[in-house]
Amino acid sequence: MTEQIPEKWIEVITATVLKEQKKQESIASKEQHDRRFRNTELLVKNYRKLSAHCENLPEQIGIIHQEIDMGLLEHIDLDLKEVMKSKQKTKMIMDYIDAMLGAYKTLAERGGEVANRRHKILRDMYLKPNYENPTALMERYGVEKTTLYKDLKKAIEEFSVVLFGIDAYVLQTSGKRVDER
Image 1 (cartoon, helix red, strand yellow):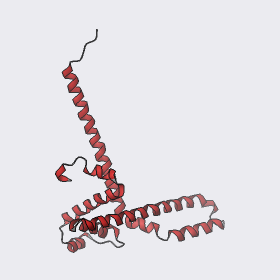
Image 2 (tube, rainbow, N blue to C red):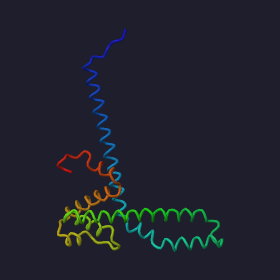
Image 3 (cartoon, helix red, strand yellow):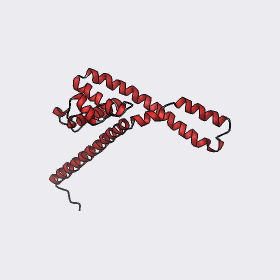
Image 4 (spheres, rainbow, N blue to C red):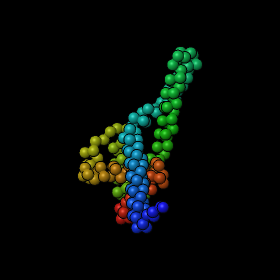
């Protein structure tokens, strides 16, 4: 003879399972947002290095191909081809990043004074060829240290949306109250 589980227990079990499932989905969404934000942050922090990596790429490729054609690099041919493929891939990605930075700049300029300031802080801190220290930026933009870093974080979040599209936007706004958006 089989015993039936009381309906009240089923309701409690179902509610508990749904609550746990929603909690796990929230954790997964937050981790995905954190990963995209972190990737964008790493990208802008290493922008100068990545740009330098791509400098003179056509000349570098030409020289390598000449040396391969002349038979000077036969024994290390595969390794160099992989290095050059990596450089070309980096260059393609950097071209895309530069285009998205242009789009972000346009959006920031249209977004008003604060949005424009955020873009400029991001640009001055990480994207310009020469490093500028935070103190100089605080003075230039008339902000305190906390505001500078809040603006920088917000700029990276905004650029992440431009870079990754709708997925980044959905992840950025999920879990926030309506008045926080």
